[in-house]
Image (cartoon, rainbow, N blue to C red; front, side, top):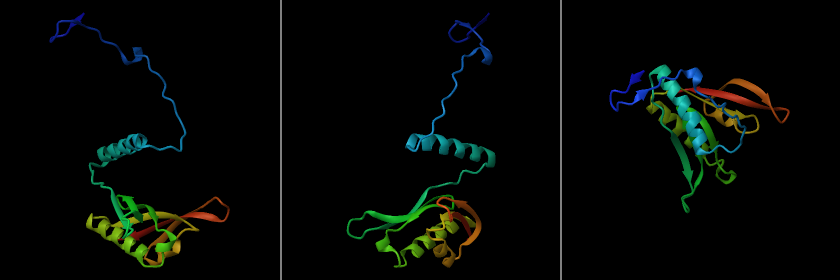
Length: 157
């Protein structure tokens, strides 16, 4: 028998095969709260950091605010230089705000040392808007409803 050098109590060694293990449950949900995002995002970020030795991600948002209320009316939110969400209400379209937000997004990416950017849009959304701003298609995958597709786009910065 072994004894603990600090407290003097006996030490019992247990092999991993002797530890009872409960199987994890798997759930499908459309309710993604902050704890789920932290667990998945944090775990993936840690894995990527360990694999690459690089940990340079910082969130970024370029937002359009209502001049009277100060409420966010739309904008771009990204991680690295992946354009994740981009929306402007109908009343703010056609005023050049979308192009300005996109340019600010690209400029910040360049400032952070990014060489290219990527996004996906849906065929009924705004692929032509991105093309007018120098983005090019590099892939397309059919999706629902029939006749619709996800369009993957990139731009060298």
